[in-house]
Amino acid sequence: MAGDAGGAAAAAARAAARQVVALTGREFEGVVAIERCDDGWRVCVEVVETRRIPDSADILAVYEVLTGDGGELNRLRRVQRYARGQLNRERGGGR
Image (cartoon, rainbow, N blue to C red; front, top):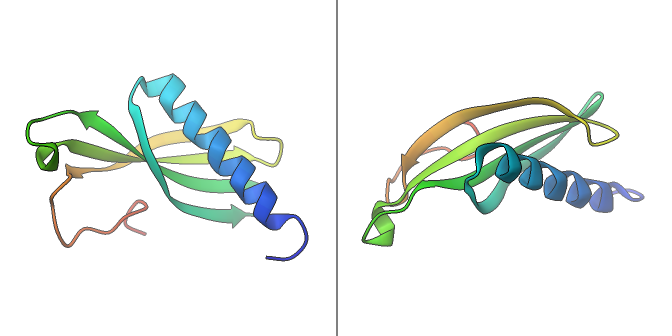
């Protein structure tokens, strides 16, 4: 990545993850996609929606976060929900 784009992407991913956790109360699992947009970032954050036994039966979700360049939240929406062990699913909102 050119210049500080890698640092900016990492900062956007961290900010998006914090926003999802704060607004949903869900447990952070990982960032599954990040994309630079015209006026900010599109970040897809995976969270644990429901814990189950065994862990492979947990219900996970992907939330799409759109932020401005300054990190302000422009949109948050759940784009996918699935069982952890589910195969053949697209990550990052299925785009």
